[in-house]
Amino acid sequence: MDLYHNSHFTYHDASHTKVKSLTPSHLQKSAYHQLFYLSQGEVNFTSESKVTPLEENCIILIPAGTYFTLGSKLNFDLFNCQFNAQVHQTLDLFEFINTAPQLKVENPLLTEQLFTHLLKKNDDNPESSTIIQLLLCPFLKQAQKGSQAIHRLLPVFDYIEENLTYSPRIEDLAKLLGLDKNYFTKVFRESTGRSPGQYIQRRKIQTACTLLQNQLKVSQITQELDFYDTSHFCRIFKKEMNETPKQFLKRMKQEG
Image (cartoon, rainbow, N blue to C red; front, side, top):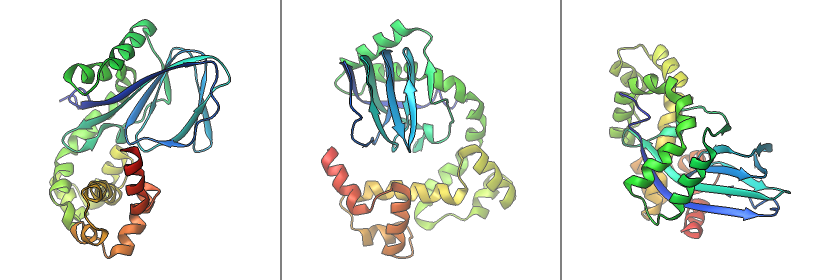
C-alpha cells in the first residue's frame, strides 16, 4: 500500500497576490495546510523568529497550526492554496513526514497553471484534490521513505481512535504489533516524532476542538475524554494549542 497516494486532499481556498511590496503581515495561524508558490520576486516567511526567504519558482509548505508572518521589499507574484491532507480516516498526513522547508519546482509554467485552475474552483471536488496532490508531488517524493513505518502502525491508530475516551494503555498498543512496551515506544516515536502518550494526548485535544465547536461545555469534554478535571484539561489544551479553550472558540468565531 502506498500510504501517501492513498491520502485524501480536501481543497479549502486559493489566492493570488501580485504587488510591489508588502510590509510584514500580522501573525497568522491557519487551520489548514498552506502551499505558497512564488513565480516572481522574493518573499520572506518568518516563523518562531526564523526567517525563510522564498525564492523564485520555489514552493513552500506551511503545516496547519504554524504561526507565521510574510513580507517583502521587492515586487512579487505569489500563489497560495489551503487544504487538508487526511490519510487512513483521522490521520493528518503532514504530522508524520519531514520535508525541506522549500523546494524548486520542476515545471514553473505547469505549477502556475495548476494554481490558476484552483483559483477558478469555488468548492472541493475530485479535480481540486488531484491538483493539490500534483502540487505536493515534490514534498511527497521526499516522504516515501516513512510510508512503510506509518503503515505498520495503522492498527495502533485504529485502536487509539476506538478507545480514545478510555486513555489506551501503552502495553495494549504494543501487543497489537507483538512488541514489548519499550521497543514499541521507540518504534512509535521514530515513526511519528511523538511518544504514544503524546500522540494520544494530541488526538484528545483535536477531538476536544471539535466538541467545543459543537457547543459542549468544558466540564462535559473533561469527562468525555477522561481528563482528571477541568484544570487538567485546560492546561493540556493550552499546551497543545497555545491558547485556552475560550480563546480557541473566539478565534474560530472570528475566522468563521
